[in-house]
Image (cartoon, rainbow, N blue to C red; front, side, top):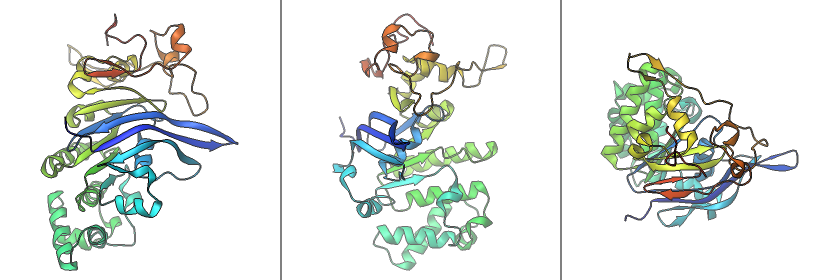
Length: 327
């Protein structure tokens, strides 16, 4: 087997509030292979975006990483100083944020931001960086790349800005791109084009990707494997086709049923998961999902189930769906 590009082991993050540390991520572990797309899925508040921010050390107080290891290509990122991590961000790990306006400098032109990023991480002259910047704007499907190069972020539409952010994430040739809800801030008509762009560029560059989303439809189109998060814990992981065909965790099955899909008459049906995600400081003992689960028993309320392997799946459930239930 190919050695993982990224190894995350027992990653834990807490939020300091009123003299107490509230768990945000609880001993999360996963791998990403070179060139692989790992989809991270779950409801809002599940800890998906927090995992991405913790990997690239973008947590700000009162949030802090309190345990675990993060290894990229054999290098322990969790042991690096903030200055050393600045060299990793952009060069070895690119990041696509939800809102492109938060990741673009409003007072610099698009071209300046692209060329500065490439010259910081690659041995390029100014003219070479300019040429590559135009090339990346062209590859991301922006019309009139020379005009975009000279434009300020506010002169572009939301979809154009997100294409620029994707170019910024990839232009320094990173090993891994973390895409955090990359289509959430866009119009529905633009989202499909943006996902196709990400998929095309992934296939073209071979860059591994950690794709964070709440949308299982996006996961089905984009991801090789899926990791399902709930209340700061990893509760199921599997190959995408296996997870969609036969989820083991009741929460994963609930997410699938909550995804709009046509019935036999072509009517779109959705079945909501009862209850809501527990807030920080209110995570119940045992399996955090047990108050919303119709399969829960006493043991579910007493201790968190460990991730257990069943075929190609890993699921943290004492009574997985393969043992007498249907998704």
